[in-house]
Image (cartoon, rainbow, N blue to C red; front, side, top):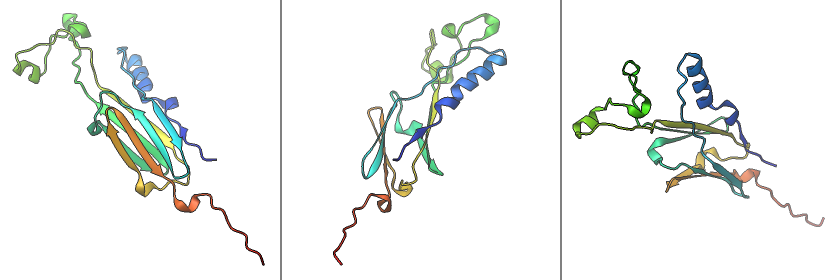
Length: 161
C-alpha cells in the first residue's frame, strides 16, 4: 500500500516566525495560510488538487527532490507598517507607496498583506519524477504524478508444462 505523508503542518513556518517575532517584542498578528489539498490515486498516477484562491501560476513554485514534492507560494501586497511615533495603527496607515502617490491616492485602511506558504509531501517509491505535470485554473492547482510502469501490478499467466 502506498501512502503520501504530509509533514509540514507540524513545522508551519508561519507559526514559528510569529512566535519569534513575539519574543522579539513585535507581537503583531501575521496572517497564516495553509491551502486545502485533496490527494487521490489510481493505478497509473497520484493526483493532487490544491485550492489557491487569489493566487496565479506566477506565485506558485513546485519542486521535487528526493521523493519530496514541495509547493511554495508567495504573494506580497506590500503592507506598510504604521509609524508608532505618530501612534498610528495598521488600519490608520497614512504612509503611501510611490504607485499610490502617483495615482493621487492615499491609504485610509490597508489590511491585506503578504501571503506565503510551503507544503511538502513525501511521495512513495513508485513515482515517475520525470513526467510530473501541473495545471492552474480558476484558483485550483492540479498536479499529476505518474507511477512508473515497472512498479504496476502485473498478472503472470501460468502455462501448462
